[in-house]
Length: 432
Picture (spheres, rainbow, N blue to C red):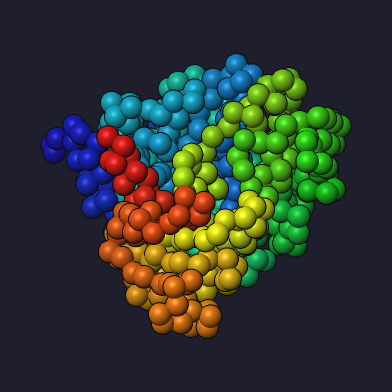
């Protein structure tokens, strides 16, 4: 009998070595372990899928439901600094001991079923939520929808925030193919919400084919607003004079509208007051989503890593007012549409600080430099107004950007969770 690890790090080492593939799409293994554990929820379950906006949508749902006094479980991925960020109960990250107990429970229940790291940890989060006796469970889909481990639960409400091109090797290379994968989280007779203003036909057709109750933006719910406040209208419910969400950015009202549509669908089981909505939206926090750090120069952290998110980042930068120079710390994964990301930021960045990332599938800083120089013919050798440099780590890149930026400038850190995490770690260590 092999003994089980007693620390979280030892558990992660074990999990990473346990299954031959990092990403292994399919539900049969997770379903088998879930059934053997008789894992079920009496409370409403909300799943949130989509290309971008999942994290913000989950954070707003959690904030409003907590304000309303409910006991809430939230599962998200990936994490920025510590794994515990992925599993929250009542707004608090679970501690190492809780995770170790959950890992022990899954290990004992799985028998000879081989689980990937993501499948194992997703089941552990579900087990913690089942044990905690919650009023609501919110689960962020890791990748796609139809074959993602989260989809072993039948959600009472499933939200697809947006559909764009990403993870093409798993989900297909068109919005129609990807829309079908995302729509896999919808269920017969249950509420299915799509916040994308131009939903793929495949998503709508799948929802109709299985008999889900589909809510579409601009048909079943929408918003209107001025500079001071905004209003939401759903099928039978209006919420007026709402403050803007504390999460900044051009697309947050779309995300907030999907959240309010979900809460309208659940109003008999999880009633929330206008004040709960206002307080929740006013206080919601989410690290690394157009997050502006206090101090000078201004630092913006944004995990934008596909063209759709980069377009939003560009729009948000444009809305910020004048800064003499914009510096960018950028690192990205090889399998992303890097040219598509860069195209949206062309002409907006004066100085690039490109970084290697600590993963084999990351693009190297020199590869990123070649793409930028090819794209932006305005960058010339010896030009003091513009520059492109390469660095071995996000910390080195950011330290250099800080040393060169004037106090009225701004530094945008984006391109990957690992880029943002590297800068956060550097800032944390500098403060201690």
